[in-house]
Image (cartoon, rainbow, N blue to C red; front, top):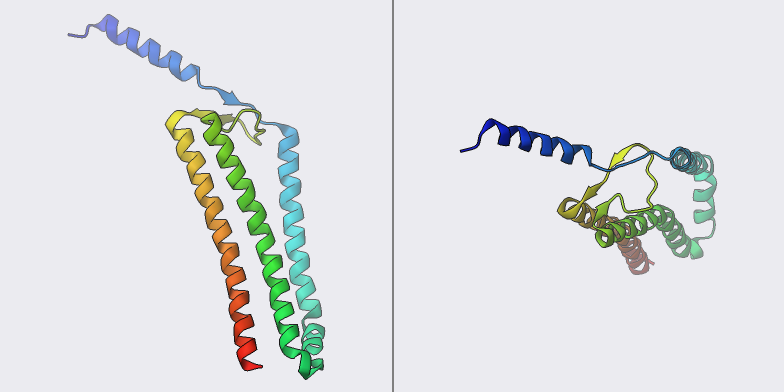
Length: 164
């Protein structure tokens, strides 16, 4: 039989366990760096859209200007498109894989020494391991997406070789 003293003691121990949760403090420099990275990414994407709209007609005219080089130029345009679309996917996949590996090694999320942009409770044990594996699965998904882009380019290349 559990008495009132045991219940109070258990409640006090639980309160102590909760107060011992480590909180990783936000790093203002990391926050500025994250905001800068997002702003630069948005600007790069906007420039790509504006550049495509601005040079779409001259690009089409260049592709069609010499019928003998049409297939080669279409392949080149598709290859450049695939490279531009896949580069961010591959870079993000590498980052996620690396972060997941650090989490698995440390059995802690965020891993030791990792700067955070807001106050973050540190998760340990099985929950951290699950998060590390999930990050690595996302990395594999990003790499698979980049691979699909290259397979699409290969398909277009094969179709053009059959047609031309």
